[in-house]
Image (tube, rainbow, N blue to C red; front, side, top):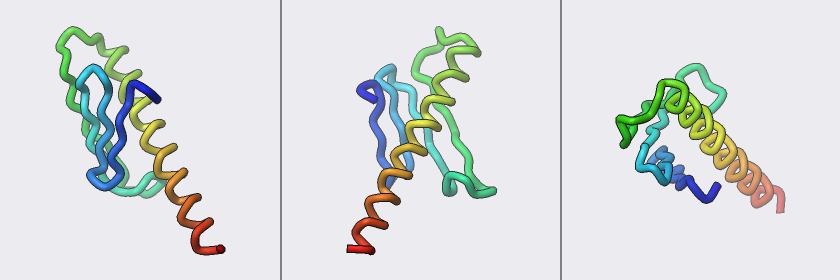
Length: 76
């Protein structure tokens, strides 16, 4: 995850290439979505899709880790 920076508070994931992914809603809900903004115009459609998929995965993993930590705090 070295190439990625996540801000749960701002609902943003930034890739080291400068591409930014703005999330809305909560992962798993019906109103969950992502708005990509690519810094490079040299990316193919396939490369853009790969970045979107990875950004979604990184964001979901981060939210799951935070939720797990919060549950641990509630039970201790």
